[in-house]
Length: 509
Image (cartoon, helix red, strand yellow):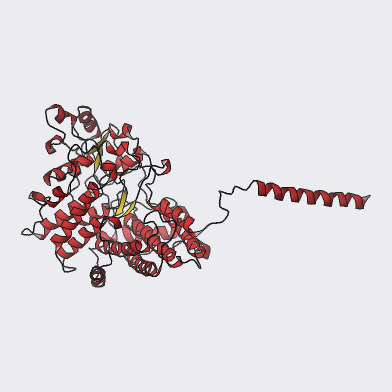
């Protein structure tokens, strides 16, 4: 009887195992991958790194306030407009990608594009480290992403060392892309290793110039060598940008944002600069002031556009907006789902970087040529932008207009002072980022002090000193718990023990 019982149990078990196996097979979705490939990881990490952090009109609007491109015209003041933030802390979450990057490289072993995936891993580590160092100060880099090796509390490298290691990694990445092939999973350059190689060189130029207050002779020599080698971006087709599409998962963040746009004014700083240059980008960026149109001006008239002072109180801005006094952000931004790409680094910016370096004597060359090339290329960019085909108020940018752009205030001040010429370069570089939803170039303002961002102590929301510009973000709050020893050492070494937004990091001292 006992043997029969055991036999029954055995047979029943075999039946159940077989049934479960068949059930599992029947319920496996053939469209869902069961293994991870390097291209899947590349797409995931690139999207997480370069997509706007929260793609909706309200947050995208906020993202444009920090660098004084726009002003919020509502009674409730947004701290981003008044030199503070709802969350004034940096973010180390990008370091979590380093483990996935390691997997990406491992899974690419034997792949024809293995070297390119190695280059991508190094580039992204450098990009993440560069942003973190600029945002905060001393940050983990050499020990970042090594939790699997038992390093769960990485040391904070000195900012100077971080920049040096970033330059090393970008140089190695460039070599990897040079030896690599086209690769899958790339949402930025469609797997073109040649473009990634150029980008690695351009980013090195940007890193070196960003630390111009602390730059070494060797770093200047490296800058000059990269320019001389001339393996850099050549035009707008090399721009490093995130392109939006008609796919609902990849729409421009401001699409369908009319309810937000009606409270988004173009900043006076932007309008005044564009008017002084007779720059038709004004008609691409803005709507005319309804108050001035009612007064008899035409939408094609530069004088019909009035910018909003970003330092004015929220209440006053809202009242003036109700009266139709300001130029709002152009309606085209909410009507085209595949809107303007988000530019992360452009050929135009590369030109302005080199033009400034020539003025500073780092490299030889004609700064005027680079300045004009940069302006012409960004104008050409808008001239050929599909999302700007309409809604430019009868003032489209044409080739003839570009050819005749450099007159009046836009002409390079060859006979002027170096300061006058650099102010021109810095203004044009700042204008590239209009309505890009990012504050990536705020460190350039901190470095140069230009454009002169308006600051009114009566409206500033800086909690420590309302007369100064914030210099950095605070360390992520979780660091006080997860990495307290290194956190304390970092703020003691850099900022006399106080983790404040006005403390000046090494690269700006």
